[in-house]
Length: 559
Image (cartoon, rainbow, N blue to C red; front, side, top):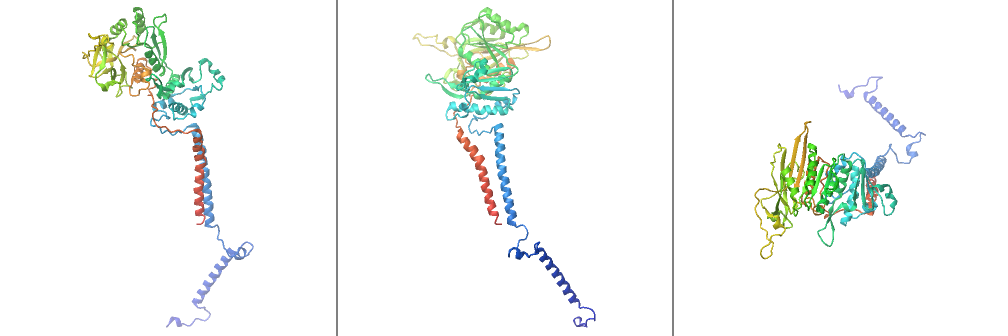
């Protein structure tokens, strides 16, 4: 039977009609629900209430526009906040842009170590107007030094954790400002370091080294800013300061006295002058006595005074440094050094035949080698020591440190070094025609020695070892501040500090070289700094950021 032709059962609707009715009912129910959803609360159709335009919730444009606006405001607020925070941080931790080749406006590693080691409050009072330093132009050498001092003092304050504070007092405009410091006898241009119950004083002129080789003028050759500041801070903050006595009364070479005093005073030593010919005694608080290039010999009584002081009642622990005047005949002094300590000062002058080891092509101006010893840990190496007109020394004690008295060669010269007699070096030997005769000869002992150390030690009843040192240099110019302040290629100053440090136990020294000013510098005037700081970072950067955000917003609002 054909299914399509089946006769319907009476009282029963066909199956397809039931299905059509069900679909129709569902369609009508969905249409009613949709119409109800589109009706406003007052039952007015949306088409009538709002025209033909229909809205289906919050539009994409509105959502993106709102998000862009919020992001813009957040970014602008963040930029402003960053500027405020950066400004506050810069006040506490100054940020400088230093493009100088020698980092003139940046603390060296040694200076940072000095600053970070300070644990006591130190006031640095500058008796000059602050604008003389802060507004100084680096176009001139003097301006570079003034500006360097200003910038580095801010870094010292930061690196020391606020222990170092700098104050500028314009005593020219207001002389009464200096009244509270009258006890220090300050004047315009002075720099006063106060703290830890001590004080040190420098001057603005000390911040530079000078070239005095020209008869007609004196020029600035380098910066001493870091050396002056660091050394004074070390001196003030140190708990131990050795006392060194410079003996006078024998027509000492003035530049030798000045050079030794300058180097030691700048490196945590208290330096006194004592006239050995007078009645003043060598006190028990003195660590080291210095005899600086005397022109006249010491008397027997003066030698006895020094010998007794050195012996210290059998306790040793005291030191002597002698710088020989190459022209002087001092047999009593030289006999004391030879008999008691094994170092002989000869009447021979060292000359150098190799022009590469001569200074200014002068055979009497020598570059010597600094020996690698227990006394020269910081100065031994590639750099040389410059010694001018040097007496030859002979060391008669072995270098065996187990001996209670031993000698150590400190500055020696190459195989190209020769000797001439003192008489010939002074031009006292002449030929029949009245011409000076100089006949160099080979040394019997090599290497030729120009500076040496004698060390005496003993063990006391308490089991403690006590030591005394005697340093002898055949050159009176080993520490010549006028000559060496402009030279950064030699290690004379570091060498001297090494020796005095080992003798006295003073390790609170500052070995900072003079800095050259022959370099390109970058600096900004007050107006330029305002434009760069306020114009670019405070206004310019936020403005650029805002413009970028607006462009993004306008482009996305059409999405």
